[in-house]
Image (cartoon, rainbow, N blue to C red; front, side):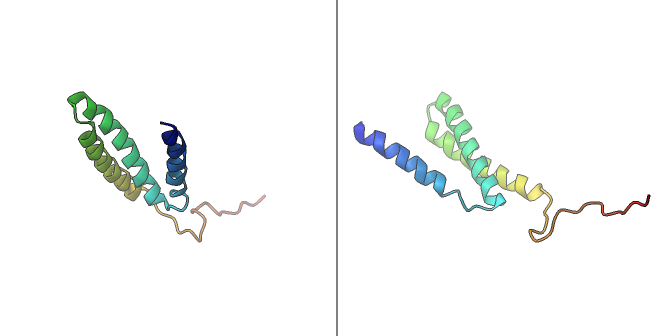
Length: 90
């Protein structure tokens, strides 16, 4: 039990550091998979198979995060988003 107290924070820190250099698509897919896995695990525990529920939930959540990302408008990273550049006279 004592070793578990030391290992869990280390695993959590390593897991979070792996997300540091993700593009927006990867962030949305990971967020969807994490949320879907959590909800699927909870719902699956009611039927007695939390692992399968979490697996299916993560798959559906990841696909949902990807589809959401693809539906968002894209801007070129080198340019600012479009804006109105009209000049007004006094």
